[in-house]
Length: 615
Image (cartoon, rainbow, N blue to C red; front, top):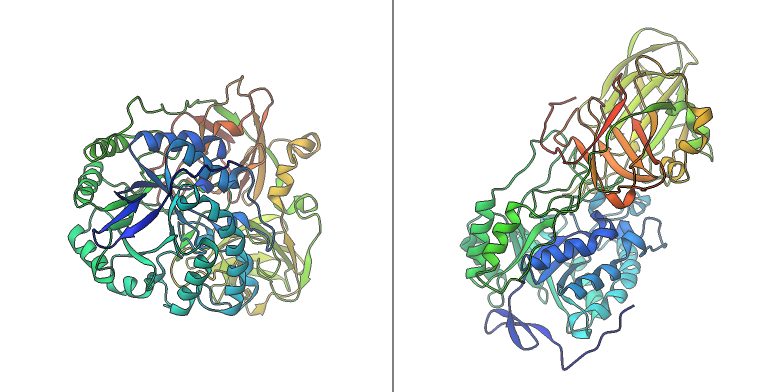
């Protein structure tokens, strides 16, 4: 770990008289950009930070997702892609200060807003409030995190200048000042009296009223379509003196599956940025690089999940490449401070490796001995993911048809209890699907005693609003005709564990069946290998005419694909995941139906903007 040399007295504070920040006693204005280390492979952190520095930024703003570091209660992971202190050190070496946003809740379009799903084991827990169970978990986590962060504060020789408490708390229903006071006490205890603590809230009176607290500096966030004067006047009503701060100036926006791809006009971004900087405001651009929701980390707003790409139409693309928007922003910044001379680091090289044909491994129902090594849990009624202590991904629920169904009979989720999608097969033959909020009924036929397999997908937990206690799986009974389905075998699926340990490629000789002309519908695994011929450049995977599913490369979960719904059509594959010399293992779980050609395509550019209509 680096040792800091504290030369002279370092200080960072708020000058209420002159309405600015003071750094080492001199007036200071930050021009910052958001970058999420959890969405970018560690290999590329330095490249992205250098590009931000060369654009003229003097700070970066960083969220810390609690669930990324404490997926299992009491077990903390700060290694590899989770090495937050290494990220802070790289920013420091690059010459960038840090605005730290440690939550405990972060929103960020991230699974459950960064809160660990194991909190939901307390069925009545009120998240983001002074609820005792919630606060106990928060106390334990912040004791670990903030203790690590203290030495990185600017006043202690590090580069963290300000620390945000909670996140847009004013947008949450509970408006619990005792909770915010408790957090303030914790942050002060671990970070000391000199740390500059702040809050960020949306540009409305209600949000500013519920999200701010005496003793925490109140800041606001808004995008290009806002009246700047009005927004900063609102900040002034809550913070009559001190620096003007826009903590999230939106350079772009997020996509949900089925949306049109969001874009924000470059001219607007540079015009509004220039106006704010002219007023002497401190601005953080959200996002400067968005990155990727790898694995299962995407969030959800109401019933619409956020896509895998978090490109955000930001100044640096999902793959970290400079855009016209970045150049325009650099031009604006150069009117206010000296921008480092010299060329921007170039885009990382991309390569189109071409077509690869996948081979069928098997239907998920036939692979349970591999994917659920501990076997099923038996229960009269369905159990949730949380009750099964499997928080992400997929679980399989199995029962039998209670009687002969000669006529197509409705299978119903009467209480909208499928969270989030259920893929239904009978005797291994796919029947169709149920989907939260949109498809609560389907018809099935079969004989008494036939096996009913229901694969349930967690599409990511809600990350914003009052419904962040988002339980997954079958939350309530399914009704078949007039029977309640009971006597379930529930299989937790460790798909990621199996694939990380080499399956299905390691035993492929016995897994692969003779090819069928048309791949069967329903949840099925496919595999292939890619030879890169000694190149390991970034690439983009397009699954043309595939429907919906999940992809792994060399055991790493790249995230979800859903070209049938769009707008995202390609998945970003960082070059460092690829091997130059060994065959690269590709594994696909297709949930609904693969195309007859079984081809996937590795391209040298992304396609994020094709909405194919609802599937």
